[in-house]
Length: 254
Image (cartoon, rainbow, N blue to C red; front, side, top):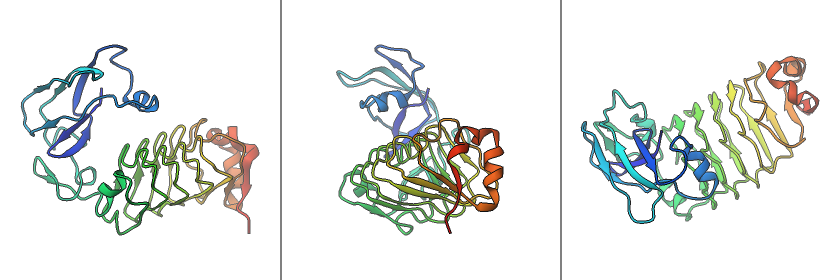
């Protein structure tokens, strides 16, 4: 089971196991976030190849966190794009989340633009989760993936620009962004995860790919129109994964 552990000053997921005081140990971390509680406390752990045990503070949900020995070669999370610039973990220097990220998380900044996210290739899981003051996000051309829950519960977000070059929009990635009324999905997107656009304020979503990307039957809720290239309307409607949304698919207005 993946939990968040702070290693070298940076929160990394997927490097440990956890035992809960109550409940099913296999219950996902996501479900705890959705209930509005923090599943585990962050623990400062010195990078090592040895197994370490971290005991919780009083009244925490977990009984014990076991941090496995981690190295860049065995833990795929320890990659430059997942580590904040200025932080080095086991010799891997971070390259993501430049500029104003810490201020965004502390609710003192409302915008992130291409320069702020320069060099970011993956907007990782929970990167901007519940940043309730965030109004505008423009992704740089380097981003290829928006991870699960990355922008979930950004309730003030009304301006989201996704970049050409983006290929994957993960599960719950843009869920519950209630002020986001429209979105353009770039031509390079190949897959959209489950509940990716649920509980938003959408009045329409525009897809630019001429080949229908993979979607889940639960990627969208509501009844708003889904606009696609005119020459691809029939292909979208004929696609098995798009069939639940066939009645909503329309050509992009001229």
